Length: 49
Image (cartoon, rainbow, N blue to C red; front, top):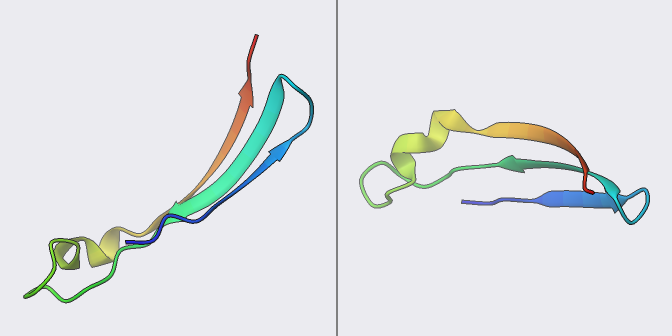
């Protein structure tokens, strides 16, 4: 399983992140092999106060 993420701080209170969840492995020898078709990417924007 890989979970890369890039985060950028616009200010002390606002930031954005883009990343993904990438599953790999064979179905026979890995618990993540059954999730191989469930890869995804995400975009997150957060404002903290």
